[in-house]
Image (cartoon, rainbow, N blue to C red; front, side, top):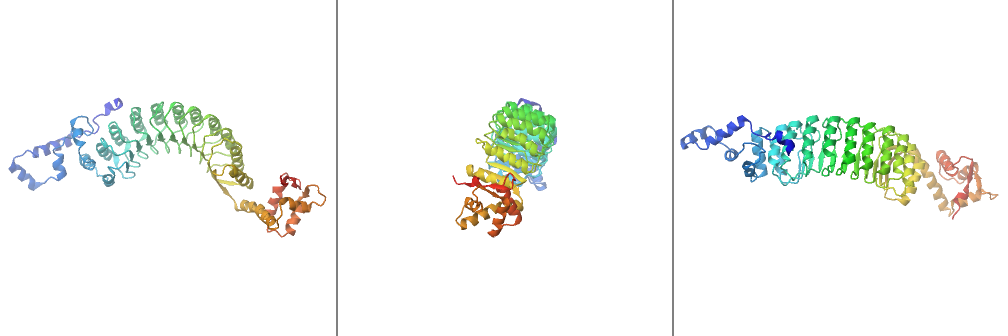
Length: 471
């Protein structure tokens, strides 16, 4: 709390408000006749009568006054605070004030509304999750909330995203986090934080073990910001979920983050979408995946990762055994990169990947076939990809051919033996084509071409059918 000594009394009443309090107090002790005269002029409401007996010298001061207000119902305390700050109460708060989750996102609370909420929440022991996204709180409103958190020890999750906090707000929040023992999750997305703000958070969270989830997405971090946060990762022992999506962390920033990831022992989820990562950034990240043993979720979607960059990532995926989810959609990788990725994962018998998102990549027949083989060993693995109708049609050719053989109680080996009159264990591709057409198997020309390539993988115009011999 030492960091807030300079801010103590932020929520004190103004001189005008104090004068009004004194006026109300004087009215309560006027002679009976005087009271009658003033009552005809203006009758105080029930709330005003109660307020005249309360001590409101300051809003978040320590001493007897706040102790007395602890006995007030939370809704009544909030209403009084709104009256004194001149703000309109958020009606939803009255329904949620005794609930653990309070969602006041998008209500236009503003700085003074935050002051009223801070007064009401100072001694609230019910609320554990407070959502205040998109409320134009600015640095001033955030300062009131941070002062409130010096007393409130129940709130563990706080969402202050999209509140125009800028560098001053980052400074205020980072000071609060220095003495934090209760906030485990804090969302600060979309607050115009720059590299200097990143340094505030990085310096504060070095060695921190309390904060578990940190969302700094949709800000303005660049290389320097990435370096600060990378250095923080190297020493932080608490953060499990870190969201840095929608920034501009590239090159040196990516290298520093990767270096931090190598030695970090707690991070489980890392989101880096929309950061412009490409070949330069993929290499250190691939090396980090070789050494990291805790990361389970990695989001690299909407970057610049092409086939070559995927190959560099695969250097780490070839040995990594902890990653469970990998998101790579909306990158310029092609079927070549997708096939490289799938081969790497299937060859790594210790790989823990359960979900792979390459949903914007159009894969070829070889990918789908390899995936079918992989599913035989790992049926739970979910791979999201795109496929053209021509690929699906080609893949169906083998099933059509097999169904034809099943109806005749034949095997593939039997079919080729019937064509091999000399018993050479080889059949020309032209003979195979003619036999397919003669049997009237319902395959179009493209399906037939693909089936030939399937059996003659080396394009020698000869099918060595001994590979289909039953063991």
